[in-house]
Image (tube, rainbow, N blue to C red; front, side, top):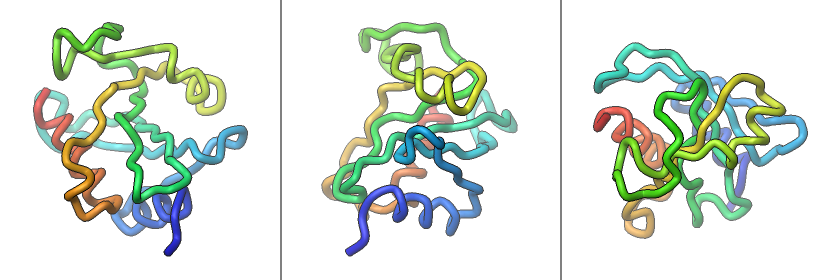
Length: 132
């Protein structure tokens, strides 16, 4: 069974995304993304993912988003979409992909019982935007 960033890249490409990795962090993946629903529908931005070596057993946590959409609020007390928004965890994306980035601490719920594939993870990402 293949694991890691190559499996994640293959899955993104199968879904039609042009996925690249950061030169200095090959487990950091970036895609162009157009929000399909919710209040940010039709917004074009970039998403970044830190892919664990054992993906799909372990999922990337929440996405990194560029440009910044929400104010920084690291505590999760506000819940989604305003809580758990960090700047410091996106330093590698800022340095190697350029632009402003923020990290949304939004790990997918139910990964253990999901299909554990890129499509399941991207469905989680879609729900994040749909629920803004």
